[in-house]
Length: 452
Figure: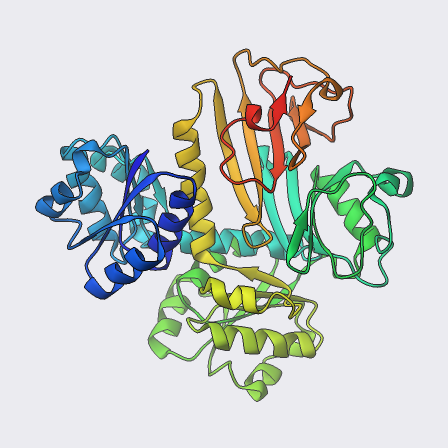
């Protein structure tokens, strides 16, 4: 596909990088000549230096022949203008980044007026991920599938866990819960485990199952807290405000520590019942005074990765059982792989997976849709949800009679709202949702991993 990415900031670069890996023809438009040169040197893409909202720049990028335009500059208004101009030039599909909360409330109007195919709000999506983690505090990462019929979680195996030393073939002999270990991350390697795989302390596991089964399983294998009642949030930026909105009225008491007086005033006006402290929360004495040691969770959301990492490590050292850290730079996440940080969120990665999901759905057959796509283990593993309709050749065939690629597995089948951890006798029916875990990039349809 021919795809234009307008804006080469963190999100634009991430989107262009991922889509170019999937062999799409990518053109990046960027105002900064220096950034353009960096993109050209590091990615296999074509670059155009200029303002993507200008018609002549879009024409230089040959927008009229593009299948999709993705506008992810820093300014919402510019993104909307770029998409509107691109539609006039003949681009069929457009995606805009919209961050402003007031704009986001009117998103349905914008879609009609600007002809948008989709909008992305990395800050709102990041807050959503943090909210899910706080509701599932024993997990490092939580992603819903099939409207909540299934959950994908990530946990770390501790030395005292009954999972340490367990062969996966013995898993269901030891545990009655119908959950499935889909992938294992061990140091720098990832595995789709087969029956002879032996789990070890330090492994990170991706597990899929129904909500009640996951909750029951977590009670047996983790020593973490079962619920969060009090949270300290460091930083009062956009993500923090979205998080307050999502958790308001949930019964979770949130205290936000923010050093900027104007930011505090905006939060106080919008959320008068939220706990708010005007102070520099990077200082240990401030965190202690505000009750860090007795908090159930700590969330670091400042605009500085170093501050977030350092304060998170301090919170962990003080015994806080659930710590969530926002890190914007991917190379910092990779450098900290062995640091045992608890839960890490990266807004650009979250936004990118939503865009990639949409692009793969555009490529797909009309009777199969990709309803969800999530990256885990630093993007080395993909978890996809396919909605099955029509009459694909594997329909109603027992899984034991299908050849499933060695680099993938069928994690679950959602049949009539019920999450099924499949055995060899289970079948896929029309109307089911199928969750696939794979270490292979670019999966577009179930046929890519299933062979009759």
